[in-house]
Image 1 (spheres, rainbow, N blue to C red):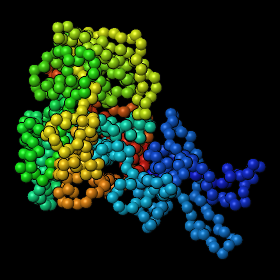
Image 2 (spheres, rainbow, N blue to C red):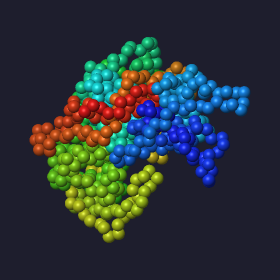
Image 3 (spheres, rainbow, N blue to C red):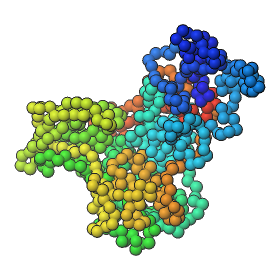
Image 4 (spheres, one colour):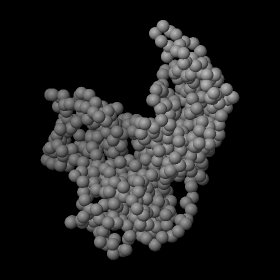
Length: 629
């Protein structure tokens, strides 16, 4: 009852024959009027789950139901009856227990209240603040899900209040790419959003974009480092991992040089994501903010060819971070994929994004169901393909691409064909002419919850096409390493590192991001860069190996207000609109197609937030249950 931020939870009192009564319905002699029996809901619940988290016996479950919930009457304060048969009298005759409005903190001066994880099943109380590194603190589900710990609940609420500059300051606190992530993030925060238990998750990613587009005055300025250090760090790769590592290290006072093989910085953000989804000026502005801190950038310098580890040693770099990503496309493994017209999707996107003249004719087929597949399909249409079809071996619901990406592709008349897989590429005179496919059927679910599929006998059919773009996954390219290098390579092609220090088998050389983890999202690359910077800093300062605790977990909870407005009415999630296809067909093929939110829709969407971030920080917040119409 004490931890419920909206005071929705009460317990029944034994004013009638209790549930502990015997078979004859008579109360036990030791039953007291003040004893509690079972939880009841007496006010409207916002689904924050704190009661279920805190309950030591896990007896409480919170579920969403359609329609209004029948609420039980409040049971009133608990009056303790003094014991007359002993000399000991409890304090209860002189005080009373009631809802938390009467007392300020359930723990008094014993410990500061803070929702926390229970690491062991024997632990009863879970709200003790140990005051250590904050690793056990419980955060809002959206913040827990974010690899860099962005306080999404706070910036969403600030957008809802029209405070855009402050919202951007929160969104950019740990992430140097808020504008980029507001457009292309995979949004794991939305998957965990508890508003989804009421109706639909908050459009967190789109609200981040809105804050970045409308609150640039709030972009946090970076103070000069307290101390300039003599050590130099070389970072190989100017993708999200390398750039975010440079951002953290330069702020720590180190001299940082980034070495990039391409003629542009940004990694797959620049050469893998089309401009109509991530405008070049938006990406470049965020890269420039990092470079303006004093980071040196060397472009057109392929590592392993024009530059080696020995060259960097001769330049007296004290630490080296390998962050070259995973851009090597996985092959289909079917006959005929060496025919002209078959492209790795990443190579096709790289050519189009670098402005090379790529013109397609006839029909195009894309194989895959992720973000790369959607980008390749939409780019194929822009490059001249007459008809574009995406083949995916599982169901549409299993596609790893974001729903927004699939929706945008279908808006541009890309056809999605699930439960189809290519088995051969057919051609004539060295050029592909058809793709032979087979249909599949769902047979169950695997451990990850995805559909298990099996081939349908006799279901083979041919699709005529002049272009096939393969987007079934990427892998790192370990060929950048010199022959005989002591740096170890895993069977799947990634570099092996120490799980705590991220150091390779070669002293002073670290690896992070896709080259060490396999293909991940932009936001996960940023988190990897932050962790690599932390590990390099400890190495250069000769500190002992330690467990990594992200900075956002160590920061004390800061309450933005003492009163929170929560709207629990069922409301439809806002969706950004797309530019009309006819407009895209003309002169705006590479203009950003998603138009984002209008100001009224952004504020209304921000006001849908249940403010789980506040609920996990303070149990004394007053909550209004409805926003005035």
